[in-house]
Length: 230
Ligand SMILES: [Zn+2]
Image (cartoon, rainbow, N blue to C red; front, side, top):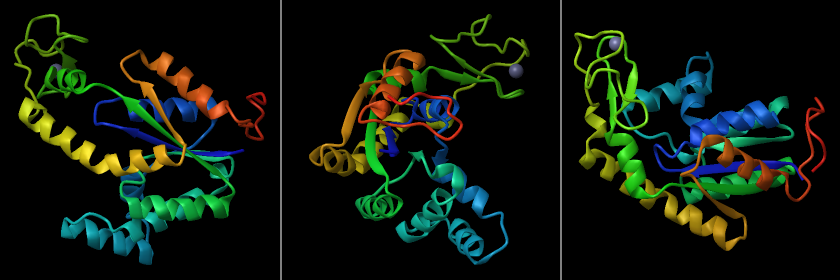
């Protein structure tokens, strides 16, 4: 059965990286609603005008508007054998709309949560430093600059922490995430379609596990034939 992979993960959990790996290795298009809305707004038609109006008002796009963009994107040929949703659904209303779409498309939904404990997410975010000149990102633990708090390429420039990466801001961000995703996690869990994976390991190990979940229940490959029947 071809699948729609709903990737769920807190900011900093590495969800985007995993979506990219799935696109590279399994030929499943990565469909990020944020990127898609921005790109779609550049076109010249009624839908683009609607998106632009919402964006300039500063409001969140309505469930219906997001759904129309998702529907349009996932009916393209490259999505026929399944796709990865990143940042969608965000609400229960969107999850219900996705059920209908999946039925129409003859695809099965699998939700995968990339689990990373709060303390680690906090550490990842608050250790981040960037160079105000070139934008290079460092991390006090995983990628420290050669010279304490200076950019390797701009040794006279003091590295700075983004205003969003203070412990306080990180906590707000993660609380919002938990509140928003809890109903979705409960919903996919209660319908037996939720998989939780340990997101503290390296990206390759995480990818292997996600691939295993997708390949189970007979995930078959695209017409490119780069993969064997599981
Ligand atoms: Zn620099």
